[in-house]
Amino acid sequence: MSFQMRDGVLHAEDVPLPVIADAAGTPAYVYSASAVRTAARRFVEALAPIARKQLLYAVKANPHPAILQTLAGFGFGADIVSGGELQAARAGGIAPADIVYSGVGKTRDEMAAALDAGIGRFNIEHEREGEVLSALACAHGVRATALLRVNPLVDAQSHAKISTALTDSKFGIPYPKAVLMYRRLAALSGLNLEGVAVHIGSQITDLAPLQAAYRRIGTLVAALRAEGHRLSHVDLGGGLGVSYRAGEPGADIAAYGAMVGRETQGWDVSLLFEPGRFLVAQAGVLLTRVLWVKPAQPHPFVIVDAAMNDLARPALYDAWHEFVAVRPRGSERFVANVVGPVCESGDRFAHARAVDRVEEGDLAVLATAGAYGAAMASTYNARALVPEVWVDGDGFDIVSDRVPAARIRPQRLPHWMDAQGLRAAVGR
Ligand SMILES: *Cc1c(COP(=O)(O)O)cnc(C)c1O
Image 1: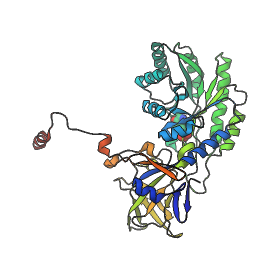
Image 2 (image 1 turned 135 degrees about the vertical axis):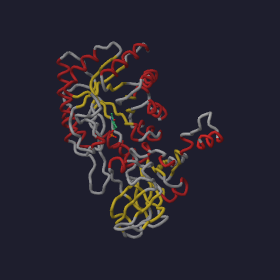
Image 3 (image 1 turned 90 degrees about the vertical axis):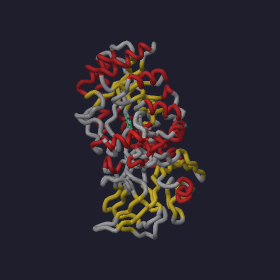
Image 4 (image 1 turned 30 degrees about the horizontal axis):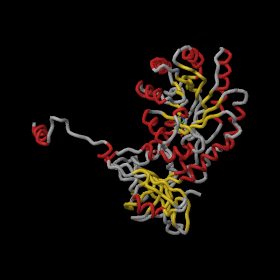
């Protein structure tokens, strides 16, 4: 178990969280190495029956190099969506050949840098991108290995903001246009088009939409082959959901592996997988301290030192994270609103929820925060980026520092505006 109560104190593996709070301060992200390994092992085992495959970790879920290195040990490459993530993947020890570049808005510079680095493949999202990539590859004297991302037009039945295969989605080529688009891109001399890619959304716990999407991709693969295209790869994307809320199950990974085996039988391709959240969500918590308990009707406000800039998911997607006291006061609970200090009403982690009773100065965690937590943090309200702590067994290390907002983006006056000039401007 990665985060569990022991002698009345919540631990990360064998380390009591108050020890980490003393060392790193709060708020802080705390990651469990064994939880990353467990999730990786479960994924690898579920897909063991698939003979030809490449596993890629979607770096955007959490780009920390310790996570990338751990996952590389299980054979994971990287799925990236920006030039910055290319650097993160390299820093995490991922070989260029094991990197796939996805995303709807790659710049020419980013594509050129990825070609320079010699990454394994590109997932192309639209025709013009394919044309430009082809021209850049020719200029580099190479052919870019690529897949065409297709929108299978199925509702992932997840939150609208993390569904990517609706009719008005910006991602991929709509399924009915895919054959025509594939034909055009396959003719480009700088591309080595090897197949198709699909990714319908995130936090998917019901496998039915994934199955429907894969079935459409199977039909498309057959249609493309009938046209004479040689397809050797299909990227099945990521999107598998985890349990955020006690009693609500995550995706059944073994059932997913079996479903993939059934649906892709006879495709005769190598399959790519791009899990992000599934591998890291449960490996992280956001450790926070209660600043104040403000009495209010009908429910008091528990004001913690973590906020929406540290963990954006509740404000962005109404996401649920369990709020758990590090030293519970018996089994006492109370109904409260758990909020952060940021000046936005949306800065709220729990609304009218029965939570562990906490008091001023208590430590608590927002659970299941390893994915899309630190990765989405900002410095809104000129708040610092919070440190990250890596725990493995009874050892821990602070693996990123608390960084004040002014250090992340040093801002200056225009060169003609010194302090005196500013006063003059105000006086005008
Ligand atoms: C975000 C994303 C993923 C990972 O999604 P998860 O829900 O975290 O598994 C995989 N592939 C692509 C193209 C993505 O945009």
